[in-house]
Length: 210
Image 1 (cartoon, rainbow, N blue to C red):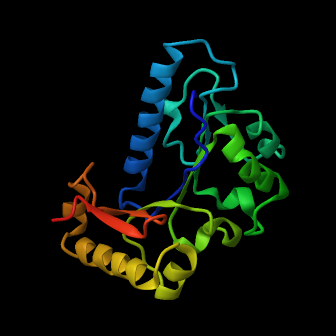
Image 2: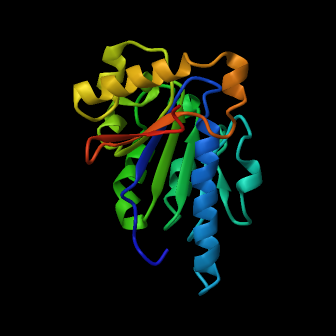
Image 3: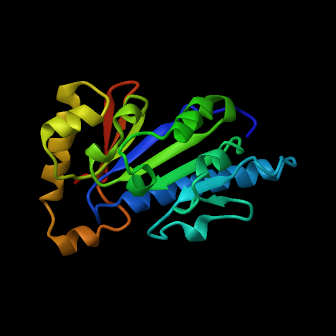
């Protein structure tokens, strides 16, 4: 895109069925709308303005466009492939299988190092804070937080921010979730409650709370 971005490293965290996919699709759709506008103004190289996804549950297939890149588990060189792209959005859903050792691969470390220069924004989607890789958690600056079942220590260890702030977010999400029966919660679609947390400012914003 015209402006080098590369400053966004986003985590979407929540137990199954709480609304992660809804928010992820919203962010992808926003990216798609933006690249449509840009591509309408000039011709970009083939490796610009692309959506790159790891999508084992097939939740985002309909959002792919011609020339986008889907990471496959049997592609052992996917990190090198990703490094070819510029001004693009990477979305990794339920990505544990990509990092089986629970550590960043050397290849993905290269992606992280290149993301500012290449203008790569990255979204990680996972069920629990503990699935955010230790070397990765310190760089995440935006969170979309849904209800989770985990110990306080796990929340503190993996989510950047002051301890009292992040624990208050965890508590408020659990309290909000308890206001609904499972059917009532499902019927909230697509307006599920979550907290948008900006680690740069240490501020959280409640969204769709009663």
